[in-house]
Length: 424
Image (cartoon, rainbow, N blue to C red; front, top):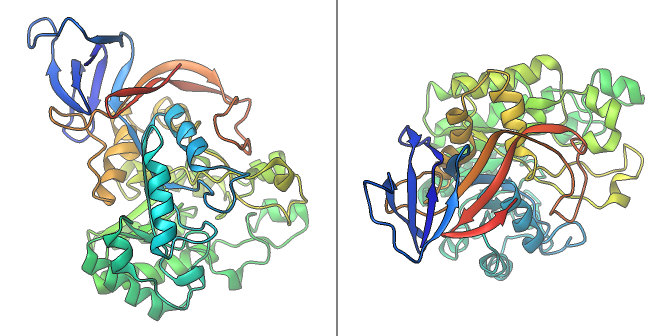
């Protein structure tokens, strides 16, 4: 058994918080209360003193790339899981742009079996279309039956509206979410860099905001038509946020996620950090960044997701227009949320934790993201005022513009399935 004592528990789902002790038996929380008056602590019990720490649900990231199978020089499921645990995540949802893609039962089984061998919960989406070619819908029903928990072609936008409509109908029938990478390639000259100050600096045309919000508008209309549960991934534009805001008034199955890099950085970072700040969709303007924060504040954007995208150093060392887009994010996500959103007064800690645990879990119908008796013993212990310098990553890759930043908010321990899987 495990007893977590003297911590300040926050459960975003119920709103319950306070100085409470948690007694864990096996993979479940057995008791929540005062260990001296409310329940008996067995003699043989591991004790963690959480005095001065926040005890919160294990974080849930619904957008990670573990590059396995196919690109394991960048990351694999084992190293990705270690990075997740270090960042306070007990559940992650893999994207399906592996090699081979997760459009078949064999690859799906490989990913899920390897995920079971890690210390955390590794779930995965399957693809919407075969080979991410946008032409033929995958056997969604079979893949759902074999363990996929959602569908996405993340990394490549779906351009055929009829394919999107049919995929939404099938996802709706399965009561499973379908997630969209919204960037129209016909409008993009060079991806990963905003069309504006950053593109002008590099003498390229870059990627305009219209590339994102025109596809968002199309898919929101299709979602209202079909009733499908959809996730607008890594939203980057003020226009996109406003479209989601207005559409959510008409339908409850509209969801959106924001990344820490999009609520922290602007296109200025691409000028400063080069390829380390190149990502799809790109970092935009200060007005866009503030619009994303406003969306997080008012519930338009319900989730924070990392889009953890590892790349090898030699890949990021290529010229800007040739280097791949994406950054790692699992190990800096919580600290960036605390530093940029909580400490600056935009969100409360409870709101941040809801965006990073309860809400993402709800999208995928996961038994996660809350603390309750009989619930899963997946927790994170946080020193909300502690400071640490980003770096020394558990991930195989180091492609992050945040390396060397001193951030507030330190994960002191991660508990998954009742076991301590990371301790600082």
